Length: 423
Image 1 (cartoon, one colour):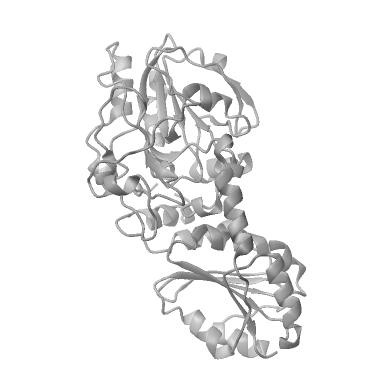
Image 2: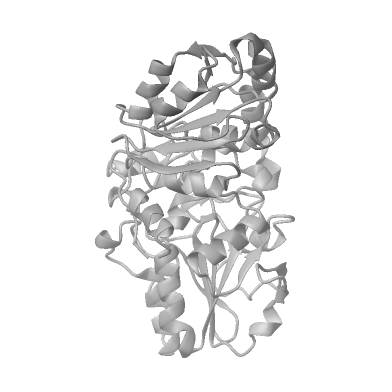
């Protein structure tokens, strides 16, 4: 796996620095390899510039578990199809519970380090348990700019297989009862319990999303101290990452959909030469060309997947263009379908029925009554193309592997490139 380091505030400060309401080291880690993208704001911006961050206070409804508290009991479904409880881990000397998620770029940034903690300590009596506290209905599309999936159980299974997760990965999104007992502020947020199942450490995994800038291995220090029978040197540190998406605060998702529904939908006619220029991609963006037709059932069934992909990544250096191959005389039918889909991006329709010239312009052949998609990097290189049925996750991963790294963030492309290579 390729280690990565990046942090972003998405939509309304979904990523911020969470500060448990207990005495602790209050030096924000954001100055070390973290920044904000143009057009994004929120609590992390000051910290990203090296200044003080207001951070995120614990939700009053979900106070953070205090040091010395007993391990909250739980019964949660896992990606393995089984229900897991605390009692099954009775043989462990130490239990480390890390709240993480599929969608959060900070959580993704820590995947390699979480895996290394598992590998380094699994034979020393340390049990690692991962819990996803988020319900996908509480995560807006605009918060999915660095991921290929949502936070539901099916997608957790996909991520588990993709990233070779061997430790229990549990889902708490339906009720969030366990996350509430812990007071999990963010993903990631780690809690470490001793052999008596009393909490001895909670907070961050280490002090920087940028591995090269890590100066304090806080979670490892806590585990090492407990294994040696010593007190944890610093039992509380500030957790930082993406805020836990509490079901009670999901209003933003509904508001996002209202705004999407209100966005204007336009259809523009385009010549073969226009589309040839799009294929060359002289921009600094990764683009997706989605060729479709109202006579293609598969095209219409999967159209929403592409629209959601556009909504996920459109705040980044990305664009998606839908290109209808229907005849110009069928413009009204095409427009009606686009309006039903709230397709507010760039929608084109070939201004002639010359589909052979269209295929020559993009350098590919396909049946115009079937789907055809191309992912084109900023240098004009086609990194993915598929006629017929395609997997939207393949499309998204190729997009994520080619969108230029944002601002001061680095490692995003490298992470997804590693995924494509099966690493």
